[in-house]
Length: 493
Ligand code: F6P
Image (cartoon, rainbow, N blue to C red; front, top):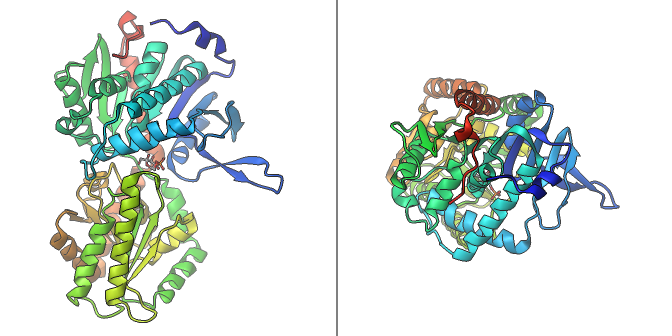
């Protein structure tokens, strides 16, 4: 398919060699003074810090994403040497595409359907519209033969739309969340369109090998691509490479934070405020039903009821950052978790010593660091999770090789962090045993386990992840002859 002439016309001089496409822009708006002047600040951590060193090598780079609200800027602007291209999403589209299709259909289905997934045609129409808008803006902002890296489940149609508009581009896609088994995916009424969208990429990356294999199997089951192995598929004579790229964290930032004296002081203060218990347990999550917050609360409640700890001996801090609070299932979860916390504290608190400290707020980096440093046991018990970076953050902050990680086998991180106490979050007795083992673990065993995990987290850091994806993308393009089959547009079917 030829590029639409209007798009060709609109393409500016500032086209980029590398375009990152993600649901959100990597900045947030801050109001810096009384005149309410708009100012932007780079969102700390996350994708942008992984990309930073990679971007330093690129002369022309752009990031296409949603600015965070319907009144955001509509024109591209520059911020800290990044060209930011905002995608306007109306309030109605936000409901259909983000709250509806992304977080009411795909999110639960991709997480083992731990909550029901809803299928609504008008949600998918909105989703298509928004994905097409992302693709159009990428097309306008990408230089000839540029590399485009599309991120995550909200934008799976973008690679296909983009290939149709701009066959010259090299397109990579990375999914940050799990990719479900075909048996589940087949329920989606738009399964063919979504899979075709992903197959528009040259390289499709997943957090785990399981996700990569699920996708390759699906593409063959739907007869949309062929291939002898799960690593390489072909469609319309074009190669599509499928691989796992487990994501890492900005290790330096956590190391540096953990070693700062004021963090050590704050961590000691946290313990003091809790009444200097023998052990502090910690959970840090977005308030999401996939995270298994209720799992650990139930396990903790039973242990208290069985008097396995003395009064005030073990305290649990649960940080649950507010998230997606317009989506029904999240509202119900909030009530469920609050109910459980209330029950535990009602049944087992003494004056001044509630066993659970529940913080339903976002915490800044320093506060999180002091919590990580104060906790003897970190509980990461998702029912399903693409990776779970909190597990890696805790490990990176334990520079003295103290602390125990209890980790769900259904988090992508469990593939790497095999020295954690691995639990099945559906097995409450198993979670209880792991917790008891964690609080009683001898220091030398804990140190051995933590050192092994820290070595892995340090090696596979965020920048290495970004570099390895972009290197693989460059390699697959080199290996693919740039004959007519590669450079042809495709219909998105
Ligand atoms: O894990 C997927 C993800 O989209 C992350 O990229 C993001 O930080 C998190 O979920 C919360 O997403 P949002 O608030 O944009 O829905």
